[in-house]
Image 1 (cartoon, helix red, strand yellow):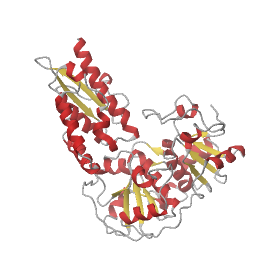
Image 2 (image 1 turned 135 degrees about the vertical axis):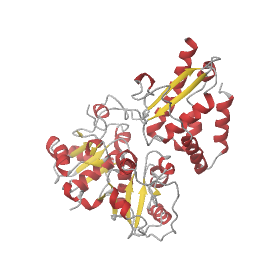
Image 3 (image 1 turned 30 degrees about the vertical axis):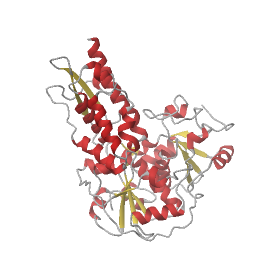
Image 4 (image 1 turned 60 degrees about the vertical axis):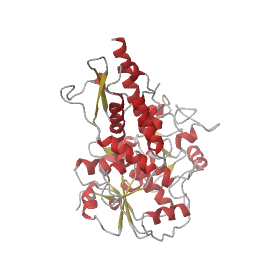
Amino acid sequence: MTPATLQAVLDTFALFSDPTDRTNLLLDYADRYIEVPASVATRPFGEAHRIPHCESEAYVWALKQPGGTLKLYFAVESPAGVSAKALAAILDRSLSGLTPAEIASISSDIVEQIFRQNISMGKGLGLRSMVEAVRTLARRAIAA
Amino acid sequence: MSEITARGYARPEVLVSTDWVAAHAGDPSIRVIESNEDTLLYASGHIPGAVQVDWTNDLNDHVRRDYIDRKGFEALMSRIGATPKTTVVFYGDKNNWWACYAFWVFQLFGHTNARVMDGGRLKWTKENRALTRDLPTFAPSKYKAPPRRDAPVRAFQKQVLAHVKAKGQLVDVRSPEEFAGTRLHMPDYPNEGALRGGHIPGAKSIPWARAINPEDGTFKDAKELTELYSVTNKLRKDKPTIAYCRIGERSSHSWFALKYLLGFKNVKNYDGSWTEWGNTVGVPIEK
């Protein structure tokens, strides 16, 4: 089941039928992307954190917080990685602070719901892979 | 002599530098056009005054697998305020892959007053040049286009079959894995439904991006391109040549390099490419 915080984001995207509005909303998120702080990771980032298939060279970390929730961090290395930054900001804002079980429940289908006409051939797999990477980290946190 | 002219290309005038584009900012006789694969990039920031031409929305027929017709092209040119005299300058992401594709489609309508900005978006951004989110507005123009003429630059499957039988020059610009038939699509791209893997018999494997300097997306100089296409792969400029990839976009880039930078006399882009060939019953395939 999609966590309510993420569902709220999906509902917002669903409200906009005009492609320009949706593009602007995505850019808004991309502008709010925050790179992983040096206290969590520094370059060169570990390959274990690299998101497969993402052409923007993106990385993800999930740190356990007091109380058992997770905090997500991302790094998107390509200056052209606008979509990766937008998705990273969405995932961070809607999933950080949730339990690993809640985060593991998300589906990579959200990528189509968020990006619709803005999902180009080259980036669809990478964006889905970003969601899968987050789910994998959440499942590992459950098992740990 | 400009840096581009010094590279020894057959038609150096088709390439312009980032300096040239910056120096011509606001020139009403020039329309700078951004064409990307990533539809968010233009909106995230583009060269001031540049318009967007999107390959799916603006250049492709929305129903049939084909390009826009004359009316569609006239409407597009009117929207971007261009006349037949306007110099259009293409640039974009992925080493100008989509910019060359748009350039090629414009040639179906004979808009020869066209250029590509060498290095594309990558070089422009690496040089920390200005980008804006402001959308330019141009008064709609009147553009009378000639009927679309595919023959000079576009190859159809029937022609390619005849070309294969005649042992004509073919360039497969896909990745080595696609050429070998070990994968049906580009690395990290979805499979768009080719039923068979491999390549068209007799094709030379010359991945498109080998024509590029990866650090800034500029084209290699004529000597390096000659080494790649004519020496290593023994392609002759005087022989008809057909380039193909998966849907004809990557091969537009190689078509551009062969035709304008190396001066191949007769080079065409087979846009049906592997998504047509790899699905057609009975056509010959090599692996």
